[in-house]
Length: 128
Image (tube, rainbow, N blue to C red):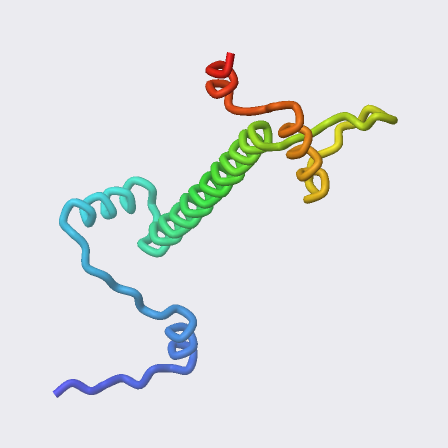
């Protein structure tokens, strides 16, 4: 019968600060890890630290790319919609552009278009 050795306080603190982490892998990966350890002279912990660091950087970069693409797409879509649907006219006094926003302005434009016979291009062409 083997006797269990009592752990020293320093060993207990060491194990608490550095818990065991294990996992299963496949043969090719195990061989690659062993080769990296041999060639680079690094530990399993260093390999995991590098892997986690690369993974975090990769995820961060992917999120940045997604966010940037979203922002660019949003801006492009907004600009296209604005150029297609935004109605402006120059101020009679200063010449700066006024954006049609209010219901009152929209109603005035509607009355103007009705008064001067605005319609679909095909409808207007068929009239003449």
